[in-house]
Length: 388
Image (cartoon, rainbow, N blue to C red; front, side, top):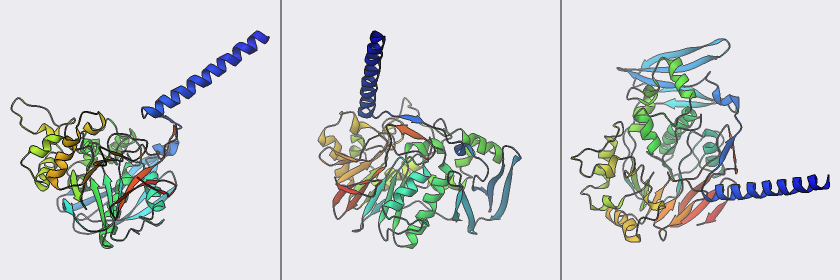
């Protein structure tokens, strides 16, 4: 019996040690494991609104019903120039928020200069609650989703779609805050990420399967949810891939050094990339510099060169000098915390945020970046600010 107990003790000690080593390696390499599966994540009833252009009209659709009694689509048609007053339902909290929708929007400017603070976030990947709560904690909005950041800049550096199941809620919240920020003299900047581009191209491999069923109930293809006839699709397609705000360049992936040698200014760069959001990239025998704009490896929304130790300091700084920036802020490549790289010329903010309906091991926590009076602060989800 003593031998059995000794062996069991050694077994469990070894198992504990291996578990701790595994968790340590997972943390070092940025790996985590999802667990739990809240069934409210699959709720389709009350999904919406999904708004589509039909000539000079807008078709506004909500899904009603449930899996037991059956689903049906509630819809209305209104003139395209008329504002829509509706609501968005969030299953996890069984609550709605009011939404005003206008079909009038345009591509934003690419350069901004003032002395206002900038709060920067990226890669929330359809996690509505996590994003909303972080904004409330850091006083960008209040609990009623009203803008409270004054004339400040909220900069979203891409990948707010896919993976989690609150895509509809998160995009409409961003859409709403964009309008409320402007009304208060502030700015919400939504920089396009590679996953937004994937959705605009009809690539939903990373999307929650729920949205295939949502499209089916609406009588649409999944690609149509962000197609050119979808209001959210046109809105996303109007966004920039890069913006220069108060001397900082914001881009989802990064800036390949080749961009410094191309005869394109920031406006031309955005115009060319935007014109190809809906076009899948493939190399051709006669291509020139297109791969540095559009490819899924080297384009600004995809590039990961800052994180593979392949660049010199001069190569990092060359595109910054060309576009008149002191530093570049990027998401895309997962980090456990906001950090500076390349002597502070690169600020990496691609945090793995908590998901709305699932937990993870090790636990995730949100972080963001605040740039105020020329000083960088790492923001945490407990409301703290840490000098970076």
